[in-house]
Amino acid sequence: MNRTCTALIMCAALVLFAHVLPAQSTWGGLRFGMSRAEVDQALGSKGLKMSAAGQNPDLFDVTPAYQVSVPDLVDPIPFNVQLYFSVGKLNQITLGLDKATYIKEGGSVYAVVDVVNGSMKKALTAKYGAPFETTRPCSAEGHDLVELLLHNDMVECKSSWHGQAQLISVKWWFNKRMEFFSYFVSYQPAPSDL
Image (cartoon, rainbow, N blue to C red; front, side, top):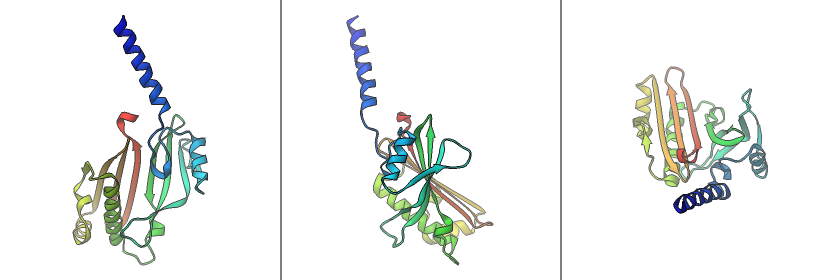
């Protein structure tokens, strides 16, 4: 009986501490598990606005576009931000490259792929360490990456990093025929925190 009582007290204490301790900050100082009202207030204090994204009641856009500054570039990289809520709590943050703003008139999409892939990879690795998962195209840079893009109809990349209590994933793909490039950075709670 004594062991059972001790085990129950320890379980109750763990549950209590799990609800009392603050969650780890993620993009923009937000925390997974925040309510919509808490996120809206936190973003508002930074001059950002959250608005519904289409028909999905759990998906929200953040405006204006978020500018990511990386050490090896003069100009920041513009990203559109979307927030996903599950059961009313923040569960995922996705930054999508704002291609229309970033690819200047007459600019080369191949150069953009190389610059964004290389610069963002360096910045994320500097912050979170080496990725624990990566596919071959993610490690190509410069001439090697452009050659890879020129000689394949479709190139996809995925890299993932462990942050404190979160997973950071980069996914991008390039379609040669359409010269279409999509690049996303996603922040989610680490699986043990779900």
